Image (cartoon, rainbow, N blue to C red):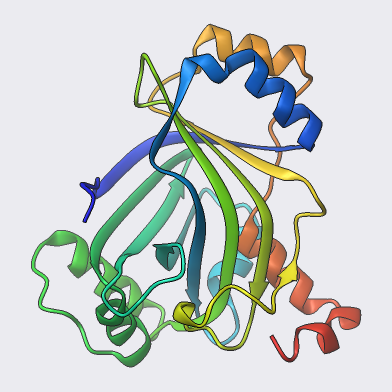
Length: 240
């Protein structure tokens, strides 16, 4: 299993860009980046929520504080694949993420069947508190996307990710069943996220300005939820 961080506190900015903007940006800054440990992968998530989708509804209202609980794996998992159970919180523009790693089957037993693993420490207690606080959160949506992930060559606290082919389903939420049969929601665009501890380096800010790339609001889970509410999509998503 790869070495992994359990606690993150950083600024995160999202940008919705075209394939052409992505190509030009990488021509300008690609030599300042290197692939991170995951490089190119398919990110597979299950988002947990209340029966009436309280967490995502609150999040879409843009409150000062919001949080999400998800299960994440990289690429289609087997029972013994490494999985992450994560609480992601945002407060006054700063993202705080706390996570634990365990086997995929153990994570599913915990979050979907209520069988906590034998994990000690503050973060498992926080996850249990989050689940109980909202009344036994349920798996609601599986989200998948193809990701390219990079870190800065000079500053590894700088991270850029590019997510495309973003898709979701609302049934067959077991990630080991694959990422097919999904509804695509990115409109052919790429969602870029820039993550850093303090400020962007000057060379990155200049590249973004030159290409007229500006921050945007894009919640993958939020858009999946809004898509589910559209009457014309009801039949399309009913079998997913």
